[in-house]
Amino acid sequence: MSYTQELDVALLAVQRATLLTQKVFHNNAKGTLSKDDRSPVTIGDFGAQALIIAALRHNFPNDEIVGEEEASSLRDNTSLAEQIFALVKESKLDDDSAENQLGGPIKDLDAMLTAIDAGSSAGGSKGRIWALDPVDGTKGFLRGGQYAVCLALMVDGDVKVGVLGCPNLPIDDAAPISADVGGEGKGVLFSAVQGQGATSRPLTSVKGLASAKTISMKEVSDITQATFCESVEAAHSSHGDQAEIAKRLGITKESVRMDSQAKYGSIARGAGDLYLRLPVRKDYEEKIWDHAAGDLIVREAGGEVTDAEGKRLDFSIGRTLKANKGVVATPRGVHGKVLEVVKEVLGNK
Image (cartoon, rainbow, N blue to C red; front, side):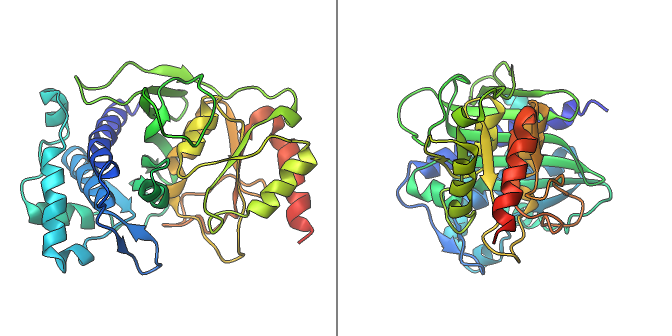
């Protein structure tokens, strides 16, 4: 199956959602709430989730959706809900045919809240399920760093389509990897379909989608010259273990720390080489929406993605990667070497 419609809708839906997130990003008052796990959620998260789910329900009404957010806190906070809906109404593509393809504007506040709550699927190994992270890297979003709008389609637990909207990454695929968000020429849309390779294109609000370019991982002939990236938050990955792995591999360059699946996009186009996300505690389970799109994009760009034990990431179990511990993403040619050192370091703990 080609998944042409699914890819088009996912690209346009993510592109439209980034129009909203960028408005919020450049506004000092981001309407932050705290979820039960004490992680932050902003009006950007809620608004982007509503826009994307509305587009998916219009085009694929029988598909399930695993979304990160739910609307109960908004139902108790009418003023915040109305603030979000005002942003949602303003966020539309300039191309009328593209906007119509997504189902047009969300009609009212209740429809917005219903859309947000439609991301409640438990996930699993049967049928068509979308995994959505409306603002991946919320802490980076809050501090003015990197973030991503992430969407992936899984069919019977296997990721078939992945899209990442990274508004603060350089459009230029040849630009060196950096957590810096300053300057012009920012905003890139990464995508992949299983078996069809990976692409990047500029994020734009004008006339649908920009032209795509094929991207590929950079071959690493000398591992000591590799650039590796990791999460900014120490709570998300073990910086100490990752530093020890880099040392044993002979890598002397400092790691690039950035938030979100922008790391997957960066290594997929050869701006970086390795992405390590090693567990900080034994009971931590990664969320599927934090990895589904990036995992496919890196693999379709010629990379390999496994957990710290060398197992493929398993998106078929539910809302988390229960069967996996950590993430190791590299070019195929060096994956075995990196994984060997990962196992050595983690085995000594």
